[in-house]
Image (cartoon, rainbow, N blue to C red; front, side):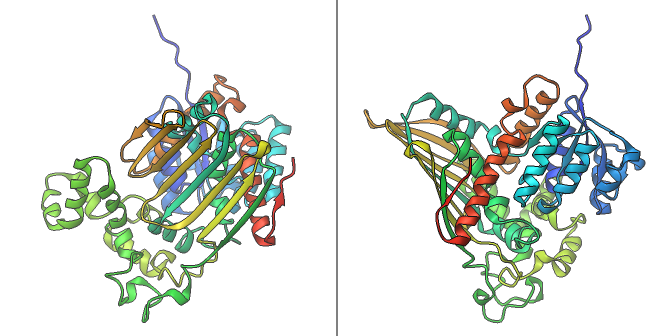
Length: 467
């Protein structure tokens, strides 16, 4: 008896960078029966070519621009379009794709402009198109457990929700000081670029729209006046503080030292030993790499964030990128203007409050959560070095661990692939878009929260959120 199998959802991609290639492209490679990319557009030849080779895309379906990909002459080439361009370059390709008949997977934030967000949602409704926004954290086991605990009433009625997004010093330096998100005008405010994930979680877990918001923040540390005496414009120009500066670029991109150090904090004793060995015995590691090719990627770091700075991941290629591009600049001289810390407080119906703390000077990458209810408390951490959720019951003063997971070096704790599984189900009609949870109307609530927070911060007063 033959077994009927659904054909894969077909897609085109514009923006073959970190998210496009290493998240959604990787999902397609590992799940060929669920998702298949048929075309790609990216102005960078090396990135475009790499994605084309990964997915066996014909030369005539590899385009230099999204304008060509979505031109009327091409028609609709697939079921869906993935929009993975930079934040301020989502709007026009999204509209073009919708008008060409595509459903969308749209990277967050939808747009750094409120009116553009609304226009995309309005066109999708008019044309009856599905849009899944990439709020991937809803699809992790950790945050689904948090939501389940709150909805079950285990801690009673929620009174206060406290959420911290602790961006590690190296990640903040890479993305928000040296990288594509270093200037608000060319990207978006950091609370939108980085924390619309977190605001989406707050809205989702509490289960209500906020009524008002207050916010304050500043750019305090990553400033020219904080540069060490004698520091040059680039780390590669002979910095006198190369050995002591945590942001010394060659250590981050050539050897991946800050990421290897994450392993020193892992729950697993074996992982801690291996991380210590990789950091302190490079000569021995070099000898062992002759017998184990996998070790070569540790000696010459060829993963994020190195994959962002160049497509030539050889030591010479990466050093060239550091000498010529923005990622080799002194962390204090990168001409950045985004905040490096911000605190935002929301007031919800029923007297519930929610606080988001965002900062870029953490030793470990990750989020921490405390939810205080009338019957108990939920505490948790969601970090690269592990995950844990505990519940404390007031009546019996008993604390139970209800979720625990080990080291995770990527994929947002499984959320990237979880989002894709959900998207495939939506496209196949197995669930409706609203059930997926991150359809455009649902996802925009976090954007409204972020825009209002920025308005409150700049006006230095409490702002009301419209219905």
